[in-house]
Length: 259
Ligand SMILES: [Zn+2]
Image 1 (cartoon, rainbow, N blue to C red):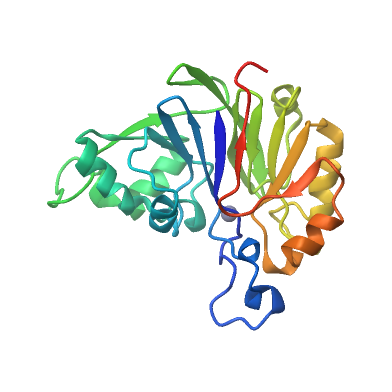
Image 2: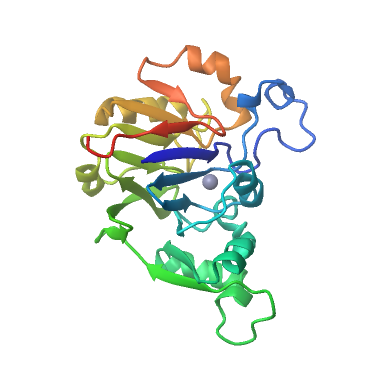
């Protein structure tokens, strides 16, 4: 199983349009961050977590020619607004594109992409989707794997993270409810958001992310959903604990399926 970081930036991406902040002007490719998304692959299976405004660019960059489904964490624009760009997959595969999300997220998607979700009034070129409503009470079967949705809290919004074997992906988290900790044991790779150093009402700061990592003790942790305000990739990376790294766009990590 492999995780590919499609995007590791916060909602505006880095660089921010028009910004003269030094991080936005950096030449280091690791300081260029598209909106937050990841691809998980094993065998012939290709699943994407979230589908933000950079989805098309991310699929082109990674040479993705088929996907088996998209899992959504929540309905905020930076995580969903690329959905129209599933069209090439629908045209090529000639089958409905599978989407997995909570009912509330599907309600939001249906109002923003009514032409995709309405059974009538489709216009030519509309992709068909196959929706599966999920929640943290049951695992989802994808390919030969069971994927566990995990409840986390993003400001006031209850959202989902996901566990694939010993990989856990949590983005946009500010609080982890007690009942979710049972899914946070024996982790080989934890992906978790760390926005910046200053407090934020709906995202972990760097300090909060590091305290969370210290609490659940994964073998390795990778930080994502990063703001330019966190600083230059290389400088931040240098000051992290040895088992913690900043993720960057295009980073691929292999997991041994049998761990
Ligand atoms: Zn977000």
